[in-house]
Image (cartoon, rainbow, N blue to C red; front, side):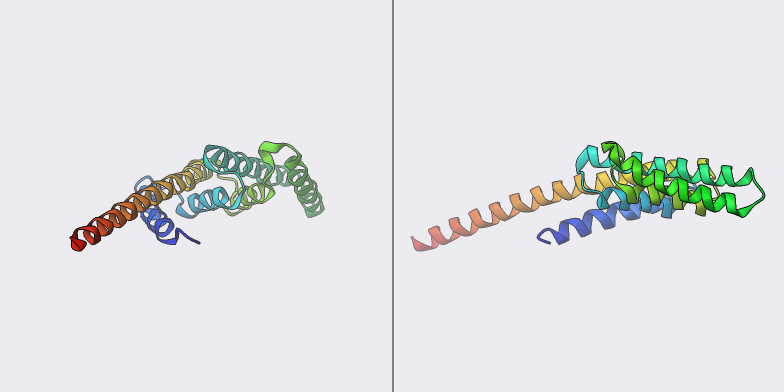
Length: 168
């Protein structure tokens, strides 16, 4: 990993910023970090990657809510088990649609929904902001890499100039 320091600086700075923002606005911090992790785990980059993280996570939230709501309609746990199996199959099959191709993103959204007992208002803001956080980390990392390369070029030019002047 060639740019480890740039990644570490951007991730550390923006993670701290996210923790503060989440605290101030009473958002569930770990949900944002899962949205961020989804961004980095899927294969798309840039804005497309952020959209892939958001759409797959949101689909999982929907499917988790569907399992919970559907299970509450029946008293038999067997219905809940069957519904879980059916919805799990659907989450895998939806990956045939390119914008929902990252299956783990759907499972992450679904698991968050289970963990939060389908409290959609507590789930959606930090999850969406988390995907934006991942995208922001990648953008900041790119800028730090560019800055580092410029500083190295200046340093090399300075060293060359210094060596040339000492030959005189």
